[in-house]
Each structure stands twice: as C-alpha cells, then as structure tokens.
Image 1 (tube, chains in turn orange, yellow, brown, blue):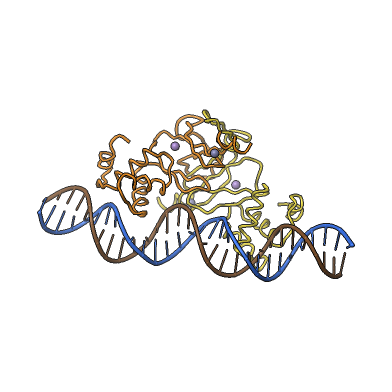
Image 2 (cartoon, rainbow over the protein chains, first blue to last red):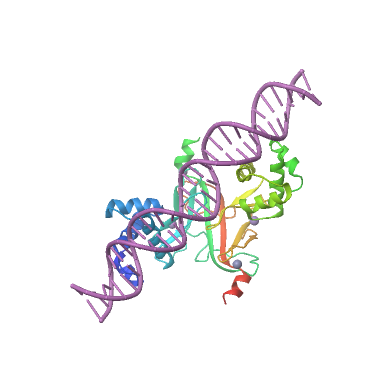
Length: 139
Length: 139
DNA sequence: ACGAAGTTTTGGACTTTGTCAAAATCCCTG
DNA sequence: CAGGGATTTTGACAAAGTCCAAAACTTCGT
Ligand SMILES: [Mn+2]
Ligand SMILES: [Mn+2]
Ligand SMILES: [Zn+2]
Ligand SMILES: [Zn+2]
C-alpha cells in the first residue's frame, strides 16, 4: 500500500488513525486474520477495539481496497494484493497460505459448463495440500 | 446412498440408528447444513442430539463416505456425491448451491503453476454469482 | 441368548469469530 | 475553532462447532 491516507481519501473515507493503522497492518502481514491484524495495530498504535478492526476491515473490503478470503477451518484472511485475480494454496496441516497466479489466465479464470441460469461473477480457487515444513514433520 | 448399513460396516463403523438416519438425511438433502440435517433426522427418527449429528458427520467425512464443503458465510454443507471431483456454484444472495461438473477434466482438475514446494491434493473451485430467482427479485 | 468390553450418544459448558446497538469521541467543513 | 455527522468504543449477543464425563448402546465371545 503506497499511501494509506491518500487511498482512504480517494474512496471518500475520512482518514482516522485506526483506518491508517489497519491498512498498514494488512500491507505488512498478507493473509492475516482480524485478530492478528489487531495485534499488529496495537504494536504500532497502542490500542484499538476489536470492533473497530472489524469495522475497518469491512469498509475497506466493501470499497474494494482490500480483499477478504475465507478458507475452510480458518478465520477470514485479508490482503492488499487485489485486482489480479490470483488464487491461494493452503496447507491443511498448519494453515500456511501462499499466493498462486491464476492457472488459466485473466479474470474470471474459469467458466462453469452448465451454470443453471446463474450469473457468475467470480471463480474462487483454493489449492489444498501440505507445505514443505509439514511434509517433513509427519514423514 | 444404496445401503447405509452396509456402507457403515464396510468402513468398520458400528451401525447405530443415528448414523443410518444421518446418512439417509444427507442423501435426501444434498448441500444441507448440520442443523438442517438434524431437522431431517428428527422427522424420521424422533430425536437426535446436536452433538451426535456433528459426531456422525465428522466420522463419515473422515472415512470419505460423505464430503464436506464450506463456502464463505455459510455453515458447512454435506453431500453424498463423492469421488467425481465436482465443484459448486453458490448464489451470493440466497445461498442456493448447485453442482457443477469439473471445468477441466478429471481430479485433480487444476495444477497450480508455482506451488512453493506444497504437495497439492485438491483444487477446490467455487463459482460465485446470482441465481435466476435472485436476479429477478433485485432487478 | 447373556454379559463384558469397548463405542457411541447425550447434555451442558465452553470457544471462536463475528455482529448489533448505544454512548462517547473524532474528523471535516464552514 | 465550533457543530454535526461519521467513527470508535464498550458490552451484550449470536451462530457454528468442540470438549468432557456420564449414561446408553453395539458387538462379540460363550
Ligand atoms: Mn493472496
Ligand atoms: Mn455437490
Ligand atoms: Zn504446513
Ligand atoms: Zn439466489
């Protein structure tokens, strides 16, 4: 995130200490949970309420400034890297999450065959597997 | 599900009324939540504890007898149809969930480009969109 | 059949992740 | 720099699931 304050103004959002700090935390910690981000913000800002973290993450997500991903068995994760339709690789054992460029091409990277009359706006892909560290552990 | 009791025995699971009833409920209601399945079971069996529904769904999932999918903003959904690597189409507005045959081919239908040393065992795809009914409503 | 041994089911407390609502505080414009 | 609308805070609440120990049930050998 280049300039959090400018970004907020561009989206007509009043600049507050909490928003700037959360935005910076998301940049510093890609794929972090709301709780982890709250910790990050507290280290830099002193304190922030749990509710504010959620408020900010929600408004930033709604405006398309950040992206939320929600893998099974995990709290929602947030990231900075948007607009490039990338996907994710998640370790079943430790939850480690990595970015993966779209397997097919540009967004939307896939088309459902028979789509039952649905109007599809996104194809979400999550690759599940075991990360190198966890492969070693349980070998 | 052909014969719930035989299926349980094949997997070395003691046959209990609860397991048989849950298995039948999953067959009758594809993509239902644990709560919905509990309701289904109560209609047929009289009563079952909430915990038992979870116990049974977990053991059946672990054994690979049923499959669990966990779309964002929804409780986990369970289904009978396994082993064919199909995907799902979910309505953002009402949650309606439909099966979609794999866009690419056989399992695993996709390969991540750079996979960071992960050993990938599944490519999960969820198509997000709006179902026909919801398209009409909010037009 | 019967009973022992090992599982499963139950009910209740608890955890995690997130939302709701009202009061206090803050940010921006004039 | 003051006022008003937006944001933050606080504390209660909700949904989905897990943990635990006691009671009930399945299975298997006799
Ligand atoms: Mn990412
Ligand atoms: Mn399905
Ligand atoms: Zn791992
Ligand atoms: Zn719908």
